[in-house]
Image (cartoon, rainbow, N blue to C red; front, side, top):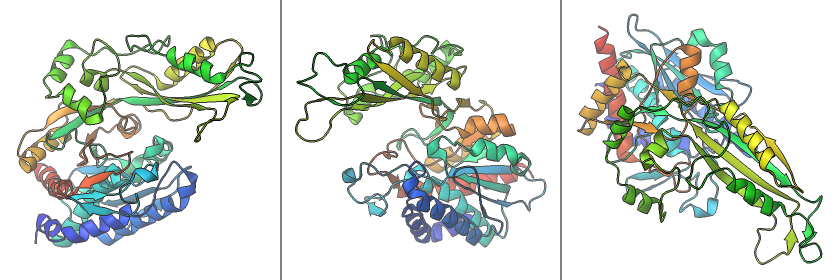
Length: 457
């Protein structure tokens, strides 16, 4: 039996494994789910051992653990470092799920569960492909090292330290990532770049306590008014970021790159209808794809304060809060951007208020793979054969920190080879993973490893 025949004959068992994996609430961002993180790591290590990788281990970091394993019995063959993550986003808001987030449910060729697309479904694929080769053929076509973290949804906060401390262990020819996403379900794509990120949190203080809006209205400072003015000050009317220094160091994109983006089939009207928006947001003078792929952004993620319950409560709140995230492009320094925003908020805080600004350690630089990388070219060849048409090269507006970390710390480029798609509602209620994508992913990873090993002979 071949490895391909093995995964095809055992698809139902593989799906059962994915259901079991997705049932584990391995949420990394909420300490209340610490047990789920532990269970997720242990389940994954056990599954790797069952696949035939006896050295699979749960490894501690200063945060959530990393799961590692390897098979290195093919002298002279390429060595790839397979990356993925077992942690998931919180399920909130729970009431908007059709079926509970951690009770995986199949509907219409889709498996619904939190984390099933990002990243448990795509990440389980290489584990099962390793098992297929070892069980059906006795060995892998290439040498493989697995590095699966539990903090991707935290910005891979401790991954860099772990990789740097074990750099020799993770030496490889390149990284093949099970994380990432295809752009559209009906259009094969390979992701070649992602934006960086930084975040900022701020609190505006008025009076020392909440006050009655009749007794104190018109005389006491209202921090909700102040935070609204602060929020409005962050952008010009054109949508351009108004923070001094925000664009410092940014490497301009060439007209050639903009022309290439313009050739990507994209219906802006259909996109706006899909997300239910009456019109576009962002920066004037750029197409929607340019705004999402090659321009930096500053987004307000939350503004709150005062009373938000049913009915009315006539109160002037003492504090108001805000959260910001920025997506960054080559040349921008996340720490410098954080400092620029901090300076802007402090300088523009209205009189009669104080503002406290926190700069979380949630930062990552942007990443792009060289156009001629052999792993990228091979991915395109495999996808062409599996999906029946040549994939487009696309950029990601989101952030996957590992590309830049592996490049800087290990000197390795990362090929993103995920079979999730951006419409699968990851990070939102009713996240799902297509069963057809699971099947295609299994076939593609088998083919990829076979071709990579054959090319070295």
